[in-house]
Length: 513
Image (cartoon, rainbow, N blue to C red):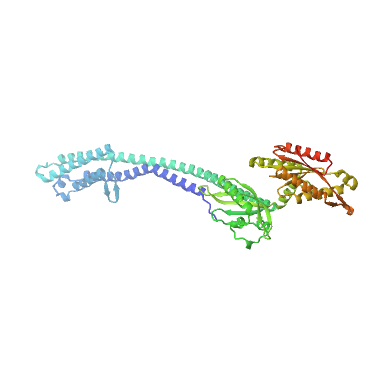
C-alpha cells in the first residue's frame, strides 16, 4: 500500500517552527536585558547596604584605633568595593552570574563610587596608621566620615534607581512582546486551521482526480479489450529490446495454434510470414519505427494445417527510452482472408469476361499498351490478332443463346490451349476475340493464325441435345511497328484486315496492309 504524504501536518509543523523562531527573537532581547539587569540591581543593593552598614557604625574613634581585621567600617567598605568591581567587570556573586555593565553613563557613576570608596578606605587606613594625628574630639571625625558616606550612598542610590527603571522597562518590553506573541499565536492558529483545511481539500481533490483517472484508464482498457474481442482481433505485445513477444488467444486462433506451439518470441511471428511478403513487411516495420508512426501492412502467414492466411497487421511503438529508442511495440492482427478472396473475385470480375473467363476489352488494351512500351524499349516486334466466329448469329438463331454461349466458351478454351503461354487472349466483344503475341514477327504470326484457323475448322462442338456444330473463323493480323505504334492504330489495322477476311469469303487469315 502506498503511503500518503501528510501535507497538512507538515505545513503545521513548519509553521509552528517558524512561529517559535519569531517568538524567540521577539522576546530574546527583553528577556536578556531582564536577566542582565536583575543581578546588577542585586549587586547595587548589596553595595548600598554595605555602605549603610559602614555609615551606621558607632564609636568612630574607637573603631579607628582598632586593627584593620577588626575594623567593621573597612570590612563593609571592602565588600562595597568588591560589589562595585563586579558591576564594572562582571563575575559570579553568591550564585548570581553578573554581566558587566555596558551602559557608559552608569559605568561612569559606578567608577566614581568606586573612587570614593577607595578614598574613604584610604582615609580610614591613614587614621589607623597615624593615630597621633587623629583629633581627640569625635565631632571632628564623625561629620567627615558621614559626609563622605552620604555622598557615596546617594550616588549608589541613583545607580540603583536607574538600574531598577531599566529592569522594569525591559519587563514591560517583554510583556509587550508577549502580547505580540499571543496575537501571533492566534493568527497562526487561524492561518494553520484554514491552511490545513485548504491543503486537505486540495489533497482530497487530487485523490479524487487520481481515482477518476484510474477509473477512466480502467474503462479505456475494458473498452479496448471489448473492441479487440468484438472486432475479433489478435493482439500482440513486443519487447523490442529482448524479442519477447506475447499474444492473446485470438492471435493463436487465427493460425490454428496452441500456447504450446509458440515460444513467446518475435520469431513466432516472423518465421510464419510468407517468403514473398517477409522482407517487405520487416522493412515496413523498421521504417515506421524510425519515423515514430503507426503502420498497417497486409501479408500472409502460414496456418498450422499448411494453408496461407491473409493478415492485416498494424502496430506502433508505445514506449521509448531516454534516447528515444524503441522499447516496446503493440498492435493487432486481423484475419482478412475472406476479404482478400472477395477482392480477388471482384478484381477477376472487373478484368475478365464472365462467360469465357478471358480478359475483357479494357484489360486487353491495357496489356497491349504495356507490350508496345516493352517492344519499344527492347526494339522488338509484336503482333495482334482480331478473330471473329463466322456465322455466329445463325448459331444463336438456330440453336438458341444457350448453344451460342457454349460455342463461345469452347472457342475461348481452344484459344487458351492452342496459343502460347505468354500470349494474351481476350473476348473483345460479342463473337470477336483478340490476341497479343509478344516478340512475334508478322510471318510467324501468320503461321500461328493459319494453324489455329485449321484446328478450329476441324473441331466439332457439342451443344445441348447431343448435337454437334462446326465453326470457321476469320482472322486479321497487324504487326508492330509496321502497321502502327499505338493501341488504337494496331487494333484498327487488325480490324480492317479481319473484315477483309470476312468480305473475302470468311475462314481466312489476312495481314494488314
